[in-house]
Image (tube, rainbow, N blue to C red; front, side, top):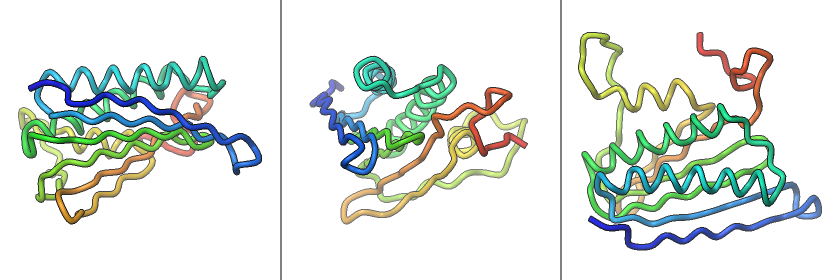
Length: 163
């Protein structure tokens, strides 16, 4: 399957607009090739936010964002192949990642099982994000996660401990 549309729009609201907001969107006909396109879109979006808008994007945040989008896109490929929308928004020190797909089944994390091969994607997403929400839409579902762009003293996201 091929990418339907790749639309990278960015918006900017200065301090008079309540803070810096940089946003971008992409649409895919999600297949396995498009997972890497989605990761590339995140990488390019965050690089542009840093270079063109002065947003502080630590390497950790860039890597985590690509990992999260890769896991979400993989789930779309497996369980809801077809159209998929990816929205990214930097608002202050948070990166919002929203992914819509046409599948009606809401994801749920399985109990941790180190002997299980695969199906750890949602566990990974929940471990690295500050928030996660999923909701049904008239068609499909929308998942929204937030990733901190702040680094704590140990390189972990500020306010988030892996333990």
